[in-house]
Length: 423
Ligand code: AMP
Ligand code: MG
Figure 1 (tube, rainbow, N blue to C red):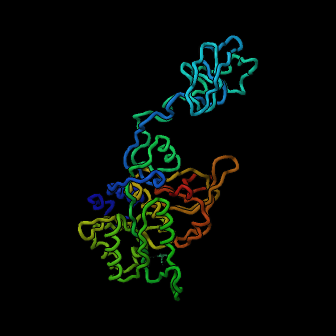
Figure 2 (tube, rainbow, N blue to C red):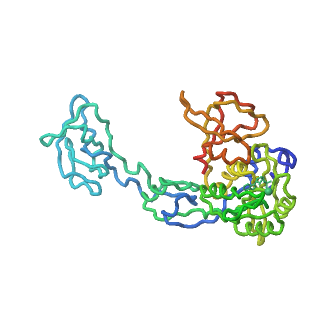
Figure 3 (spheres, rainbow, N blue to C red):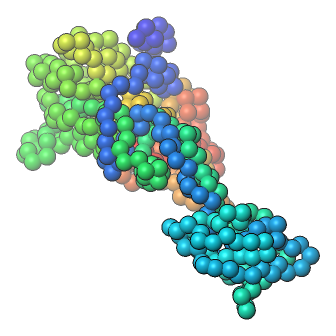
């Protein structure tokens, strides 16, 4: 954690977002636990080791079309190619029954094994068949066309998927095509989550005077679910040192990551920070960003040498979610052993001017839509306060105004992060 000490990370300085992100990335190492799961249970999991192909896929040269297979040496460039049809028809799943000679062709179906010596297939709709002869016009086909080569998808002995890959639908199919029924995956990252604040009530409780419902736990559980981590929901903790200490120790004992919201801003009771500081080397940052200035990160130590990483997010609902995406998302993926999967960013023209002062990053809520002249345009979703969660629900993207950037004029390009990619 030496990286967290020196300037510009020293207390008091406003930390650029990029510096904070780098400090987090540098501090973390992937968890090491492995487990073997059946293929159907591997969706969304992180591959623990390379999958090396035990076979060629496809296992034989085969036809990509329903048509007639023949030798490309028989193709004529100066006039129609005319070939005698021999039998029997080669169907998918069987081996060719008879040899096919020079000047001959055989009817073949998609996926069927190419008879020895044949390398080209004329699709049935591109040729004429009459009196046992197949005729095709010159220049119609190139040598080798409509033949899938043995091993063209996956070659035996070659890595088919690299460790760190997050397994999606296509990866499951690819592994199945290799005949592999179980995979070694990284164990799920365990993230303990709780909200802090005396004013918070949980769903099902009466909303006492002056109180609000805890929304952060639900936003964050949603964001965590999309990352495929195991969530340990520790509920609500009032601003009470004893309760907080007990919950924190339970979190450290049970999880790899402790994710909290609230309690780290300037106005908050000091014991929150004291307590966090007493459990490890936690850095309390004032990040040069809006929303989300207060943020704490660092290792927490529990009993028996157990360590967990703290990500203490600000309490304001928009700030909590934005800081999750900016600081926690990539970090959790890295801890989970996944290859980097940066948020999908694109450029959109702003339909309105946006005031912005250089020296801090801003993450405003926007609606990205196709622009009339091509490309994308973006407009903001009204009031942008850190407590206005509606600004997130009405948006489909974050408008990312960079640290050194100044005000945006109408028509200027800005970076946007699409919510649909925020997994
Ligand atoms: P804090 O960071 O604890 O000072 O909280 C900042 C603001 O966020 C206050 O208005 C809190 O009431 C609000 N807040 C804190 N935690 C939550 C939560 N879990 N759900 C909704 N609002 C919250
Ligand atoms: Mg609070």
